[in-house]
Amino acid sequence: MLKEEKKAHLVLPDGRDIQLDVITDNMGNHSIDIASLRKDTGYITYDPGFMNTGSCMSSICYINGEKGILRYRGYDIEDLVQNCDFIEVAYLLIKGVLPNTKERQEYTQLLNKHSLLHVDMRNFFRSYPHGAHPMAILASMVASLSAFYPEMEERDPEDNIDITVTRLLSKMRTIAAFTYRQDKGYDFVEPRYDYSYCENFLNMLFSSPVIDYHPDPVHVKALNQLLILHADHEQNCSTSAVRLVGSSEANLYASVAAGCCALWGPKHGGANQAVMAMLNKIISDGESVESVVEKAKDKNSSFRLSGFGHRVYKTFDPRARIAKKMCKEVLEAGHAQDRLLEVALKLEEVALNDDYFIERNLYPNIDFYTGIIFHLMGIPQSMFTVLFAMGRLPGWIAHYLEWRHDPYQKIGRPRQVYSGPELKKVIPINER
Image 1: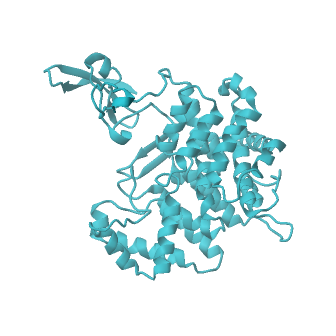
Image 2 (image 1 turned 60 degrees about the vertical axis):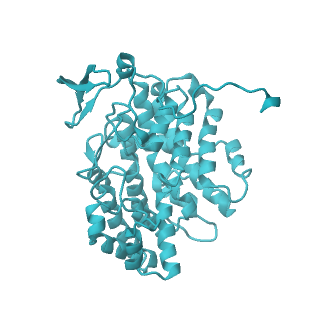
Image 3 (image 1 turned 30 degrees about the vertical axis):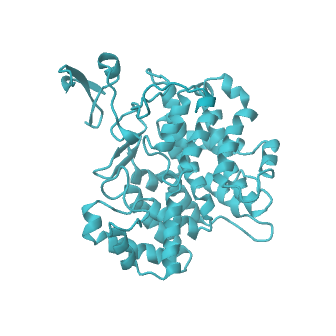
């Protein structure tokens, strides 16, 4: 990072010409430093949704929405998906480097060691009402980890990073699997030392004493890749929530629980469920894809195509290309036709050849495909956001730890533009 000699000039209504520093990041992008704007001028900026506001300096993730670039710690997302598994990528995000063979093996052993849940935590699952949303259970159970491991609140997580992080990575996976089993009314399946991270998760979901279940290698590969694709995405809603809560010096578990709650929303982690609901409705209503596309283009219609367009990407979502290929691999491995995928691919074809969508850069995003992949793997829609949270966890942890080393390190406290009434006087209750 460098501050350029060239300044940005801001002319205020009272005629003052304010000079602001210009910061250039490692990719050549420019930003205006307004950290002292209110102190120096009495003014603040107004930026709904923080679309033009850089909240921190971060070395974890880089996105170029205009060019469709996504990188973790400098590595292109496609390169990571093709050559690494999820645990290697988690290690990269949290520690800053890819592990060698020995480090990878030691990390796997730590994950296995900390994958079991405290017996009292296991009992919690039976207390939730039937039909409780899996994200409600996930968020509360993650927050509860700080009650079962209170010693972590007395230490800097960086001093004991492997234990803290692997405990979260392992136990969150177990919590997610137990949440599914509880909803189904099945007994819990313990993690196994001889299975990989993703094999273990699928086995804890689907293993049964009455069938000879072994995780499908194609499904294991797909889950690995999906978790990698979701592992980080810069300062999104849930990551910003983790950093904001962490800025109060709340512990790691509380901060990640906040991330789970932020991810729960349909505009964030629930987007792939919206895609599935849309595809199912198209099929059940017997609509043609062409008529659905025309309805989406009608400015008088409230209908919108779920899974198209992205807040950041103004071209094709780089994760979507990978997910589309993965989707076809999972389908072909099952030797079956799936009506949902047929409709999805037809919808993509029609939309991508329509000037309305081309002119507005409305390309399919990752959510357009992930729900279909989970569906083909036998995972219910209620669990989609839980799997998203499992993938995003390494990114949340990395951002939490990065904040702890931020020299600025002030508690997050946005300003507001007040739109309420001026001073009012209380009228006695008998005169109102």
